[in-house]
Each structure stands twice: as C-alpha cells, then as structure tokens.
Length: 407
Image (cartoon, rainbow, N blue to C red; front, top):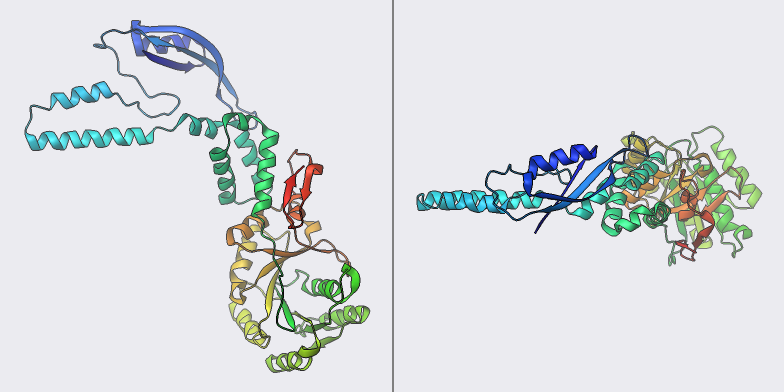
C-alpha cells in the first residue's frame, strides 16, 4: 500500500494538490496544522496544513506524474516508469541498448544520492539551530567555527535533543571550552628557563612581564620563589627602560637593558648559572613589517632554547588577530598570552582563531595592577564573556586540568 503526505497553506489547497497528483486513487485519512517555515528567531514564521492518507490499488494509466516534493525539493524516483523505459528500448541494437540502460541507471543513482534523509532535512530546518548560529555570530565566532558546531549538533542530536534549547546551549558551551587549548609548562630540565614575550606595539608586554616576574619571583602565588632576572631590549621606546626598572626595584628583581645580540648573549652567559628564570621584554613590532621582525629574531637568537610567547589583546579585531598569528609565526611561539581580557565583550573571534591554528593560551591579564590582574589561562576566562547564553553558569565546575564540567 502506498501512502502520501502533502502540505499547503490551507486545507483546500492541500485537497486540490492531492486531487491533481493522485486523482480518485487518493483516500485522505488525516490532516493537521504544521509549521511550513520556522523563520528566524520567530520572525517570518508561516503555518499551514498537512494531509496524509493512502492510494487505493488500481491501474496507474493516465495518472499525472508526481511533482517535486516539498521535503526534498528533488524529483522523486519512479521505479515503474524506469522499468517501462528500459523495456521500450529493449528491441534496439545491442550497443545502443546497453548505452541507454547505463545512462538511465546513472541518472537513477544520482537522484537517489540527492535525496536527503528525514533526519538531516529536519535538523537543517530546526529553528533552535538558527538560534544557536545567531548566538555564535553575535559573539564574533568565525563562519568556519560556527559551521563545525552546527554540523556536530546535526550529527549528534536527535529531534528531541533539538527541541531542548537550554540543553543545546550547554552542549555548545562545553564544545567551545573543549576547543580552547591551555599551555602546559611541564618540567624544565635546562637552567635557566628563558621566556621571551613578543607581540605588536601597545598590547601591554612590559606590564605583563612584570606580572610574570611577580608570579615566579615572589611568593605572591603561594609558591617557592625562583631566582628571576628581567632583561629589556626595548631601549627605543621612551620610558620603557625606566618602567621595567621601577617594577624590578619594587619586587627586588634585577633588571638589565641591552642593545644588540652580543650584549644579550653576554648577559645570559654571565647570569645563567645563578638564575632559574630569565624574562625578556622585547620591542613592539608591527606584524606587517617583516624586515623588522626578522631583525628582532636575529637579535633574540642570542637566547638559547628560549620559549617565545605571543602577547595579544583580547579586543583585537578578527582580521588583525589572524595577521598577527601568521606573521609572528617565524618565532615559533609556544603559546599566546591574552591581555586586557576585562576590556573585551566578544571573545568568539579570539577563540576561533586560536582553535583553527591549534595555538594554546598560557596566561590571561584583566587589569593594570602589578602583581595582581594575571592568572593562568583556563576556558572559564573566555566563557564568562560570552553574551546571550541563558544557561546557569553556577552549574559549571572546573577540574584540576582547567576543563569544565556540568554539575
């Protein structure tokens, strides 16, 4: 027995469509109200009627061929018609017959491949997926990142799952958190450890390096203080030397200033044996000035086995983020240190760019106070700046690996 389902704006429109398509064979058994178009966030929503029933068994001669369905928008494959076409050409020459049959079989396969499954079609049209996409776009996530989230929702969620908007938001937040990679310092066998901060002008490298000196060189973080030394190579910016020397004096951490490769190498050789950690503050450089970046890389070659950490502001524009990440890649930086998080309201562009390039985050700064306003990075620092989500944030639990879980 063959069943049918047709939709229209009104019951009368549906009945006319059924009569036109199936004639007297159609036996309508049920009708109900349905949503023809969910619109976007409730706007443009259109309702209609769906009728269903079965076709009585009878000769199909003279009946009109079914038109494209509203569900798939693809012309349905009629097996009986295909058989008749094959039989009709069976009397032709062998080569022609085989070629024509092969062409028809290929057409059949293409039509079958084009038909979407019911689950895929329903998921694609679900209004809650549109809401999730709008939330991600509002928070400046990239188009590719949003597509990955939506495709994962379609793959992993049932129709019932898609109806639960709050649960969908929790899933998305969990996946966003999982996409944020955190830098693992690990154990450092060689002494001294050398950390070099690089990045554009104005991102707060000098203030940040003073905060790092406080974390490692004093008991501010509740750990055993290391023997720390600050080296400044930014001798061109007015007040840079005086600023870092002031921080060093307050924390009783020695500070040196150097001008070239030889002076930097001498400084590291001279104090390396007696120092656990050397922090190097560099000159701010435009990511577009490749020659200047190359010169600074040559100078910093005086630091053996140095760790480079790229400093970027949280509120950096999307295009600039990608340019900075790409052009500073010549230093082989190990992590990104995000500054001025307190001034950012849309973290999606930073999360997207770092996830797409596989770059981990080491520290977050959220103010100007030294030694305060710096923390080891964790997903929660980004998540708490997301806008528009209606989940209960108090139910988020952070484990020892800085991963989030729902209570």
